[in-house]
Length: 137
Image (cartoon, rainbow, N blue to C red; front, side, top):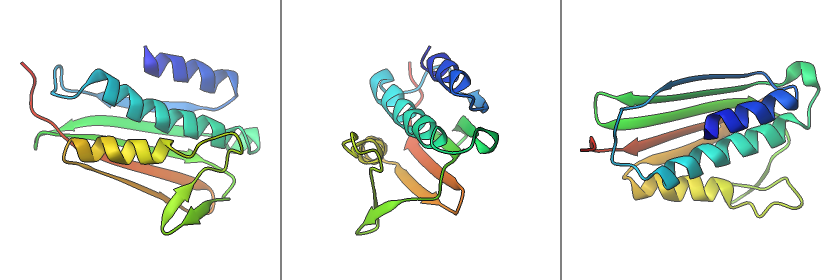
């Protein structure tokens, strides 16, 4: 439901969105935590894409379980190349935003013994999240 919600938002904003989702049928990850990570990634991506020419917009999302009991969430999106950073951390560029989304993703990844990394180049923002999971019952 969450992915469909953001797919509709992206479509209405003229943002092509591609996704590949291959999740373990059951994994020891809270639905709230997983939705928080994915929701923050996609909300940030849509916000960023809306600020550039419609012809340059895109969002790519891959969610895949690994044989090593890991869950990988990888996203890329276009953006205007403007970032605000302090101490190596990204700050919000939304004047109404709190800037807590990326920090929330990182804290949730660490909760599951994983990592979250964010990077950018002149036209793309990248998010790479790794969660260590145990197969659910």
